Amino acid sequence: MEMVVDIAVDFEDYFPSMVRRLGAQGFIMELCNGFRLLMDVERGLITFESLKKNSMLLGLNDMRDDEIVCMLSEGDLDGDGALNQVEFCILMFRLSPGLMDNNGSNNGGT
Ligand SMILES: [Ca+2]
Image (cartoon, rainbow, N blue to C red; front, side, top):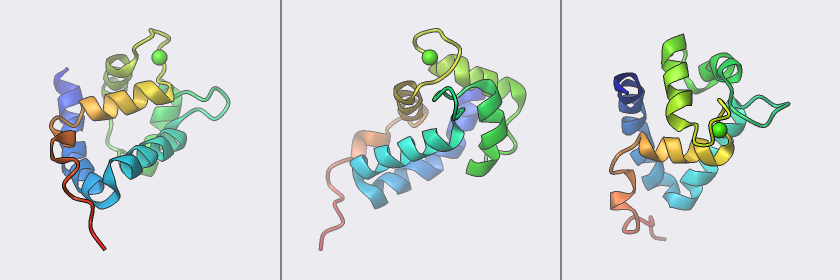
């Protein structure tokens, strides 16, 4: 749990600014893009191997093996040991406490 919080600290800086820039819907699309970057292409799931291999793409290259295991077990809701797209998005939101609190008032305007 503490390790997950560690990872979340990085995301916390990053995600709220993304939400402000993209809006909630755009942010979810970014999450889906992130999922595709991290997933095992053949299985369509994020596995330990795919996460380890692809995490560098997202600048998470200092993630340790035990942090990856921790993140997977934290996000895995159906117990298959891997993250599907829904599980990944839910995990990302859970890792960003308060993220959606300021949603709705920043549409950018034209
Ligand atoms: Ca799962």
